[in-house]
Image (tube, rainbow, N blue to C red):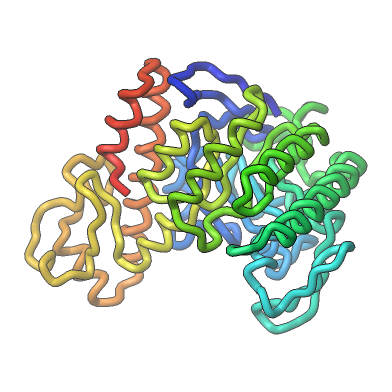
Length: 386
C-alpha cells in the first residue's frame, strides 16, 4: 500500500491511497456495507455515486455466510462483485457492543452470536485469519473498545490489552499475509497482482478519554510500525465536543506520512471538521441508517421527509444536489413512499444521503487541492450543516 500526500491546506491534506484494488482519493468517506451490502443500494449504483472504498464487518461476515465460504468464492471482492477497495474492521467493536454476551480474557473474547446464541471465540490471531480469508485491501488489528465512561485504571488496562493484541495481530498477519484469496489478476481496470499488492494492516489507538493515555497508545502503536493508524473507541456515548477534543489531541501524535483513520463518525459537518484536522479516512452508518428513518441531509440542513408538510411539496429534495434522486423526484413523492412504507423509499433516501456525503468529501478534496486553508472549512461547512 502506498500513501502519497498531494496537497495541503492548513492541517488538512489531500492524498492518494494506492490499494491492490485501485486508488482511493482522501479525505474519503467509506460507506458501511456491514454484511457485504450497503443496505438497499446495488453495487452498480455505488460505482455511479463514486464510492471508492467500502467497509465490511468481520463479525457479521464471520457469522453469516462464514469466512470459509467467502474465501472459497474468491474473497469478498468477487463474492459481492465489487472491484474497488474494501476495508474490514476486526469485529472488536461489535463484540464490545454485545456487552452481556461476551467475556474478555488475555487470550481473546468469548461471545454469543446475536443471531442464534451460539458460542464463539475471537483472538487477535483468529480475527486476522478471518480478515485474511475475507481478502479486504485494508484490515484492522484486533482491539478492545473502551466503554464510556471509564475510570483511569480501566482505560489503562484496556489500552495495554489493545497494545498486546496489536503485537499479536501483526505477528500473525506477517506470517500469513500471503494466504489472501486473490487470483492472479485483480478485477480492477486490468490491474495485475504483484508481490507488493497485498493487504495492509492498520493499528488502532485506544486510551478512552484520557489525553495522556491516547498519546502513549499512539506512540507505542507506532513503534509496532503499521502502514496506517486508526483512532478507535470514540462515538461510544461521549459528548461530541469531547470526541473532537480527543481526535484533535490524538492526531498530533500520529505520523504525517501515513493514513489516519477515524472510526465510526459522523455527521456531514463533523466529517468536514475532522478532514480539516488532518483525518484521511472516515466511516459511519449515519447516512444509511438515517435514510431508513426518513432523515435526509441537504444543503439547507436536515429534513425529516416523514413530516406532513412535505405531502404537497413539488420541489426537489435539494435543488443544489446533483444526485439522480433530486434530479427526478419531488419531496411529495418521497414523503408518499415513506408514509406508504414502500421499500423504494429506503433505497432512494439512502442513495441521496450517500451522494450528499460523497459530494461533501469531493468538495473538501477540491478545496484542499486549491490550498484554501481557513476559508475551506467555513465554506464547505456551510454546505454540510451538522
